[in-house]
Image 1 (cartoon, helix red, strand yellow):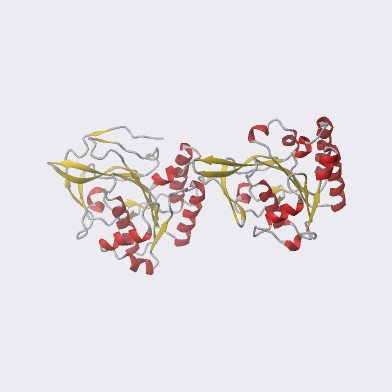
Image 2 (tube, rainbow, N blue to C red; image 1 turned 30 degrees about the horizontal axis):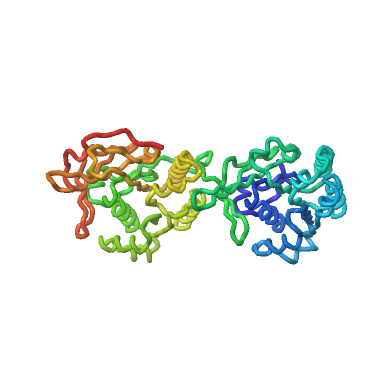
Amino acid sequence: MIARLPTHVPGLDTVLHGGLPMNSTVLISGAPGTGKTTLANQILFHNASAEMPALFISTVSEPQARLLQYIQQYHFFDMDKIGAAIQFEELGSHLLEKDGDSAIRRIEELVIQHQPRLLVVDSFRSLLDLSEHQAVTRRAIFRLASMLTSMPCTTLLVGEYQRSELSTTIESTIVDGILALDNQPIELRDLRSLRVIKLRGSNYDAGEHSLEITAHGIKVYPRFRTPKTPRNYNVSQQRVPVGIPGFDDRLLPGGLLRGTTTLVSGDPGIGKTVTALHFLLNGAAQGESSLYISFQEDPRQLMSIADNFGLSPRIHQEQGTFHLAYTSPVELDLDKHAYTMLEAIQRTQAQRVVIDSISDLQAAAHRGHSRFFDFVYSLVQWFKDYGITAILTTEMGNIFAPELTLTGRGVSHIADNILLMRYTEIDGEIRRAITMLSARGSNHSNNVFEYLIDETQGPRLGTPINSAFSAFSAPQRM
């Protein structure tokens, strides 16, 4: 078992399965402005102590005074560690007046002098870029790497390397690990991420992980994915009543199976929100903690809708069985918000959850369509793992179209149940129609019912109607 040095960077130790391998040499790469120096200093200040002395060597990237001016804005900065647990040295004169080989010899002298347990060199790339004799400097880099390998010292080499360069640079070959930081402009926003390129002899979570830089420094959001093994998932035969007249006796006798996820797809304004609120508040009335996660309507609007239908949401809020969580869909980050949702679910111990709507999550999948598919699959499996009965809403297009087109965004086959709602014109009158297209492991009605909604009697199923859906087209997938 390889000993680990925790980075204490939120989320990063999860990605690294506990931290950086102790006494390893790690390259922190990325274009300017991706957070390399911030990450290195964050690890430095969190770990430096009398028992773990640290040495920060700057080359020509930033003078010491300017560096300290910038990093002292972060909460992790501790002035008491400067000159005590952390020593700062500069190599600018060796690079500008001499050459890279001279600078590396100076690094070796400083390492022998200070005997650090944690070393940072920023920027390591300048040792080669400013060298007049690059072949000599390359040999010196190999010599330095050999020296560091023989010492009880964890080393962070910071450099402005693009990901495409990592396969050809000498620096990539001498290090034990590579953390690649990126910052991609997506329309009006920047999409920051971290990826572990290699970590010799160690496991880690592969793939691209979101990150943000705040006053606390860097925070990493590990890519949300399905656990390798289920936590404790046994298929339940217990039914969860929806609480809408006609639903639990005619459409899906007994209600939904506990721990299943239902995709509710329908036209705009058809009643998806009203249906979801009744599902949650019916559970709240039975003492089940219920959580509504919304990206469209804020809590005041949802409370007003529930009040109009006489659902007494405030009473259930006061009793701690009904909860609302709202996030603006503007500039939403998929993986970051996954942890916000999971925290809310765990904090409220929710047994019923509504996400309205997953169309907003799809719009937040800036890393590609497949990322959204993987995300929803992981989310549904997570619900199963914790026995949570969930409703995911999504909007259909082509109002009044003669055919039924399911726009499940490629996730329709992931959901256990699919409930379809749409407008239809019958005898010159606009009506609502509802049907259960599929219910995995459950018997359900194949009828299309009229769906009646008014504030006096609430939502309820009417009689079966014909010609609501004249044809079925193939589901549209991502």
